[in-house]
Image (cartoon, rainbow, N blue to C red; front, side, top):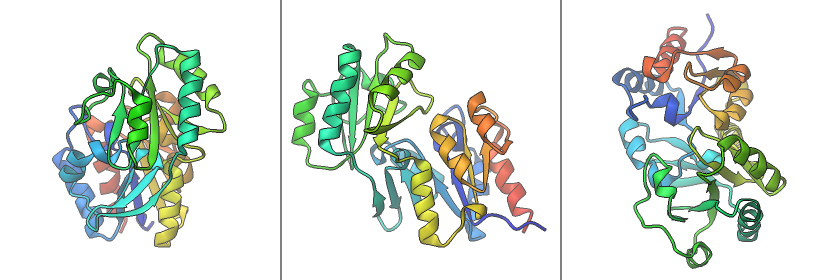
Length: 269
């Protein structure tokens, strides 16, 4: 009988969470049973720590979490930063300058270790509005925050997201790693950093080969971890391009796809 994996990496929005933004009892139970069976269940989200506290608490998972599309790995119970990848401030300035020269109407948000600076409008395009007001002068706000920078977000409601993606990707080539998470903005992580980057290093820390890892996701920013893991699963609600990169497709998030997989994996033990 095939043994279950030693690590399950699971995306949050659109994967662990249903369409209503909550975690079903069945998914909660399955993840808890996996942990009780000594399987590392590692959420890997594009969310920064600042706006993830609600889902961290509701998930009951208090060990390793990957935030910011791989920029930060933390151990929740120990309140410990395991690993961080940061964007140089000069690179952030270049990225914003390049994009704004192409799209004068673009607006930006900059995510730090524990806070965010953002221009007006950003609070309307994210699922959870930041607990602080927008900055009238983003450059001054960035300069006034002494923390390290993990990610830059760019949005422009006047530009179709596919066009924005193509142009932004070209503009930041060699400077930052762009990704999409299904929301109306582009996320820019440190160059060559992704969810797969963080998970590969964490698995190495834990002595777990990629062949004993499964990953579950639904969007563009999950593709790298689906490709890296021994087996990558796309949710039934995933974009077609994500399904093409996965080894198998699960039921949707509203059909408890994560639980369906974990229950199947546990039955193999």
